Image 1: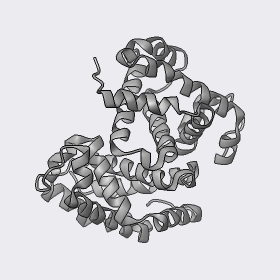
Image 2 (image 1 turned 60 degrees about the horizontal axis):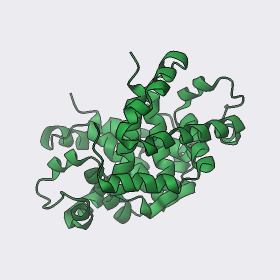
Image 3 (image 1 turned 45 degrees about the vertical axis):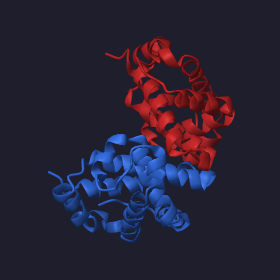
Length: 147
Length: 147
C-alpha cells in the first residue's frame, strides 16, 4: 500500500482546493490533444479536434475535460485506497475504451503543467514531488486492470 | 533531420531570449534533485543535499543549474543540427560522467514545469508542444553517443 505522510496528504488537498476543475480539466485535456496528437483517435465523435484552435474551442473537449478531472476527486478523498477506487474505471478503459495505458501518463503530465501554469511558484519543488507521486499512483491504479 | 515550423522556431527563440538563466537553471536542477532523488548520486561532491531546503539553497546546485541551462543555448542557435551540436557533450555524459540517459528526460520535464510556471497563461498548448519537441530533440541528441 502507498504510504502518505501528513505533509503529503495536506499538500495534495491544498493543491486540489486551489484547482478550478472546470478550468483545469478542459485545459489539461486540450494540452494532451495538442501536444500528443495521436490521442485524437480516442475522440472520433468530438468533431474537429485537428488543430490547436479547434481543440481549444471544442465544447465536447471542454465537457470531457471536466468529467476526467472530476474523477480525480475520488482519489483525493480516498488516498489510502486509490487502487480499489479506480478498479472499475481501469476495467472500462481497458475493455470498452481500449485506451493505451501509456496515455494516462501523458494526461498526468499535462495536468501537472496546467497546475504549474496556474499555481506558478506555489507549486514549489516539494509540492511538485508530492503531486507527481499522487498522480503516478492514480496512473498505476488506472493501469491495474490491464493484462 | 528534424523539421521545424516557423512558429516552433519563433517560440523557442522567444522563450530563450527572455530566459532568466540564473533563476530558471537552478530551479530546474533543484527540482530534479528533489522530485527524483536518485539523481542526487551524480552530485556527490555538492555537499548538503539532504532535504529540499538544503538542495534549493545549495550554491553548487545553483551554479550548475545555470551552466546546464546555458548549455541549451547551443541548441537554440543551431536548431537545424542539434545532433551534431551535442555529439561531444553526449560522449562526455556517457564515458566520463556515466549519466543514465533516462535522466535527461527527467531534467527536461522539470525545466518544462519551471518554464510553464513562469509563463503561466502564455504557456499555451502550442507553446508547450514546441518546447517539448525542442527538448525531446536535445534529449535524444544527448543520448546519441551512448552504446
